[in-house]
Amino acid sequence: MASSVIEADLTIDGNIKTSDGSVDVRGKMTGDITAVAIAIQPGGSVDGELSASTIAIQGQHTGFLKCSDLTLASTSSVKADVEAETLTTESGAEVVGNLKITGK
Image (cartoon, rainbow, N blue to C red):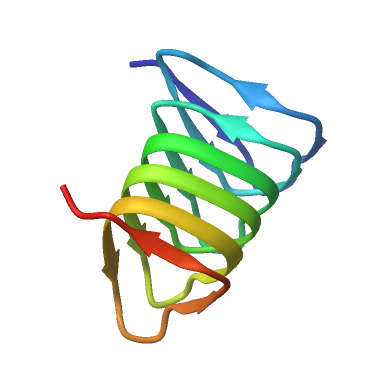
C-alpha cells in the first residue's frame, strides 16, 4: 500500500482521494480525504470529511468522519459527527459531536 505524507510545513487546500493508499497528515489540510487508512499526527489538522477503513487521530479534526476502525489518542481533538464500527480511545481524547458506533 502506497503512503502519502502531508509534512508539518505543508498546508493543503483541496481534496485527496486514493483507492489503494494511506494518507499521513502532519501538516494542515482543508478538504476531504478518502483513503484506505488515514492518520493525523500530533500537530496535524484536517478540516473536512474523512472516509477510510482505518482512521487514527493524534492531532485535530473538524468535520465528518466515517470508518470501520477509529482510534483516538490522548492528544486528539475531534469536532465532528462520527460513524464507525469500532472506537478505541485513550484517556484525554476530546470528542464533540454525534457518535454512531455500530460494532462489528
